[in-house]
Image (tube, rainbow, N blue to C red; front, side, top):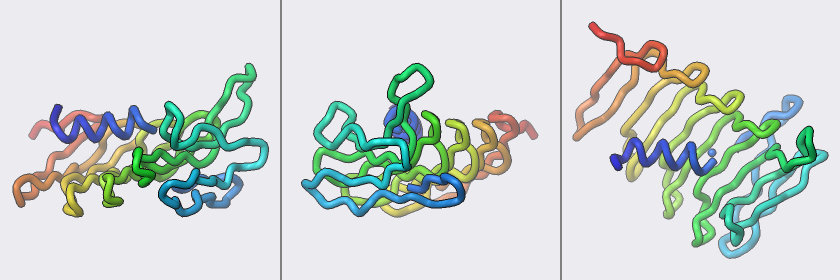
Length: 167
Protein backbone atom coordinates (compact mmCIF):
# COMPACT_ATOMS: atom_id res chain seq x y z
CA UNK A 1 0.00 0.00 0.00
CA UNK A 2 1.44 3.40 -0.89
CA UNK A 3 1.98 6.13 1.70
CA UNK A 4 -1.02 8.24 0.67
CA UNK A 5 -3.42 5.32 0.96
CA UNK A 6 -1.84 4.29 4.25
CA UNK A 7 -2.28 7.80 5.68
CA UNK A 8 -5.89 7.93 4.48
CA UNK A 9 -6.52 4.59 6.20
CA UNK A 10 -4.94 5.86 9.44
CA UNK A 11 -7.15 8.93 9.49
CA UNK A 12 -10.35 7.30 8.29
CA UNK A 13 -10.08 3.97 10.12
CA UNK A 14 -8.50 5.31 13.30
CA UNK A 15 -10.59 8.30 14.06
CA UNK A 16 -7.88 13.52 14.51
CA UNK A 17 -8.06 18.81 19.17
CA UNK A 18 -10.58 21.20 18.91
CA UNK A 19 -14.21 20.69 19.79
CA UNK A 20 -16.74 23.42 19.34
CA UNK A 21 -19.70 23.44 21.63
CA UNK A 22 -21.56 26.68 22.05
CA UNK A 23 -18.55 28.64 20.81
CA UNK A 24 -16.00 27.15 23.22
CA UNK A 25 -12.92 25.08 22.52
CA UNK A 26 -12.25 21.97 24.55
CA UNK A 27 -8.77 20.48 24.32
CA UNK A 28 -7.45 17.23 25.75
CA UNK A 29 -5.08 17.65 28.69
CA UNK A 30 -1.36 17.02 28.01
CA UNK A 31 -0.57 13.33 27.70
CA UNK A 32 1.69 11.97 30.42
CA UNK A 33 3.38 8.78 29.13
CA UNK A 34 2.18 5.78 31.11
CA UNK A 35 -0.77 7.64 32.67
CA UNK A 36 -4.38 7.38 31.57
CA UNK A 37 -5.31 10.58 29.68
CA UNK A 38 -7.95 12.84 31.16
CA UNK A 39 -10.29 14.57 28.71
CA UNK A 40 -12.48 17.60 29.32
CA UNK A 41 -15.70 15.85 28.31
CA UNK A 42 -18.74 18.06 27.63
CA UNK A 43 -21.60 18.14 30.13
CA UNK A 44 -23.79 15.05 29.79
CA UNK A 45 -20.97 12.82 28.54
CA UNK A 46 -18.47 10.53 30.23
CA UNK A 47 -14.93 9.48 29.42
CA UNK A 48 -14.73 6.04 27.76
CA UNK A 49 -12.14 3.74 26.21
CA UNK A 50 -8.59 4.07 27.44
CA UNK A 51 -5.05 3.49 26.33
CA UNK A 52 -5.09 -0.18 27.34
CA UNK A 53 -8.45 -1.02 25.73
CA UNK A 54 -9.15 -2.52 22.33
CA UNK A 55 -9.80 1.06 21.14
CA UNK A 56 -6.29 2.29 22.10
CA UNK A 57 -8.07 5.61 22.48
CA UNK A 58 -9.83 7.74 25.06
CA UNK A 59 -12.99 9.57 24.09
CA UNK A 60 -16.22 11.00 25.44
CA UNK A 61 -19.57 9.26 24.99
CA UNK A 62 -23.19 9.92 25.72
CA UNK A 63 -26.36 7.93 25.18
CA UNK A 64 -27.69 8.07 21.63
CA UNK A 65 -31.37 8.09 20.65
CA UNK A 66 -31.73 4.37 21.30
CA UNK A 67 -29.43 4.34 24.32
CA UNK A 68 -26.39 3.24 22.33
CA UNK A 69 -23.00 4.84 23.12
CA UNK A 70 -22.43 7.86 20.91
CA UNK A 71 -19.05 9.60 20.68
CA UNK A 72 -19.42 13.27 21.57
CA UNK A 73 -16.48 15.46 22.56
CA UNK A 74 -12.69 15.12 22.45
CA UNK A 75 -11.02 11.99 21.05
CA UNK A 76 -7.43 10.97 21.77
CA UNK A 77 -5.82 7.91 20.16
CA UNK A 78 -2.52 6.68 21.57
CA UNK A 79 0.34 4.45 20.50
CA UNK A 80 1.21 1.54 22.83
CA UNK A 81 4.10 3.74 24.07
CA UNK A 82 1.58 6.31 25.34
CA UNK A 83 2.47 8.90 22.67
CA UNK A 84 -0.40 10.70 20.92
CA UNK A 85 -1.40 9.00 17.66
CA UNK A 86 -4.43 11.08 16.72
CA UNK A 87 -6.55 13.82 18.32
CA UNK A 88 -9.80 15.40 17.33
CA UNK A 89 -13.45 15.57 18.34
CA UNK A 90 -16.86 14.13 17.69
CA UNK A 91 -20.18 15.95 17.60
CA UNK A 92 -23.22 13.66 17.92
CA UNK A 93 -21.19 10.66 16.68
CA UNK A 94 -19.58 12.43 13.72
CA UNK A 95 -16.04 13.74 13.39
CA UNK A 96 -15.88 17.52 13.52
CA UNK A 97 -13.25 20.25 13.45
CA UNK A 98 -9.50 19.83 13.25
CA UNK A 99 -7.98 16.33 13.49
CA UNK A 100 -4.24 15.81 13.79
CA UNK A 101 -2.26 12.57 13.37
CA UNK A 102 1.25 12.10 14.79
CA UNK A 103 4.10 9.67 14.30
CA UNK A 104 5.46 7.71 17.28
CA UNK A 105 8.07 10.42 17.98
CA UNK A 106 5.41 13.15 18.18
CA UNK A 107 6.01 14.61 14.70
CA UNK A 108 2.94 15.76 12.81
CA UNK A 109 1.83 13.43 10.00
CA UNK A 110 -1.47 14.94 8.95
CA UNK A 111 -3.95 17.72 9.67
CA UNK A 112 -7.43 17.81 8.28
CA UNK A 113 -10.78 19.31 9.12
CA UNK A 114 -14.12 17.54 9.31
CA UNK A 115 -17.67 18.84 9.12
CA UNK A 116 -20.47 16.37 9.79
CA UNK A 117 -17.98 13.46 9.34
CA UNK A 118 -16.88 14.67 5.89
CA UNK A 119 -13.45 16.05 5.02
CA UNK A 120 -14.02 19.78 4.73
CA UNK A 121 -11.21 22.33 4.52
CA UNK A 122 -7.45 22.16 4.16
CA UNK A 123 -5.71 18.79 4.43
CA UNK A 124 -1.92 18.66 4.85
CA UNK A 125 0.48 15.72 5.19
CA UNK A 126 4.13 15.61 6.25
CA UNK A 127 6.94 13.04 6.32
CA UNK A 128 9.74 13.69 8.81
CA UNK A 129 8.67 17.35 9.08
CA UNK A 130 8.61 17.96 5.31
CA UNK A 131 5.30 18.84 3.68
CA UNK A 132 4.34 16.30 1.01
CA UNK A 133 0.68 17.11 0.32
CA UNK A 134 -1.70 20.05 0.57
CA UNK A 135 -5.24 19.97 -0.73
CA UNK A 136 -8.69 21.47 -0.13
CA UNK A 137 -11.89 19.55 0.52
CA UNK A 138 -15.49 20.73 0.39
CA UNK A 139 -18.21 18.43 1.74
CA UNK A 140 -16.06 15.32 1.24
CA UNK A 141 -14.78 16.17 -2.24
CA UNK A 142 -11.44 17.59 -3.34
CA UNK A 143 -11.81 21.05 -4.84
CA UNK A 144 -9.21 23.39 -6.29
CA UNK A 145 -5.46 22.97 -6.52
CA UNK A 146 -3.80 19.99 -4.86
CA UNK A 147 -0.06 20.33 -4.32
CA UNK A 148 2.29 17.39 -3.87
CA UNK A 149 6.00 17.56 -3.27
CA UNK A 150 7.64 14.59 -4.94
CA UNK A 151 11.42 14.19 -4.80
CA UNK A 152 11.81 17.92 -4.10
CA UNK A 153 9.55 18.92 -6.97
CA UNK A 154 6.13 20.56 -6.58
CA UNK A 155 3.36 18.99 -8.63
CA UNK A 156 -0.01 20.78 -8.81
CA UNK A 157 -3.25 19.17 -9.94
CA UNK A 158 -6.62 20.92 -10.10
CA UNK A 159 -9.69 19.07 -8.82
CA UNK A 160 -13.41 19.65 -9.19
CA UNK A 161 -15.86 17.45 -7.29
CA UNK A 162 -13.04 15.03 -6.35
CA UNK A 163 -11.95 14.43 -9.96
CA UNK A 164 -8.88 15.86 -11.71
CA UNK A 165 -9.74 18.66 -14.13
CA UNK A 166 -8.72 17.72 -17.66
CA UNK A 167 -6.91 20.48 -19.49
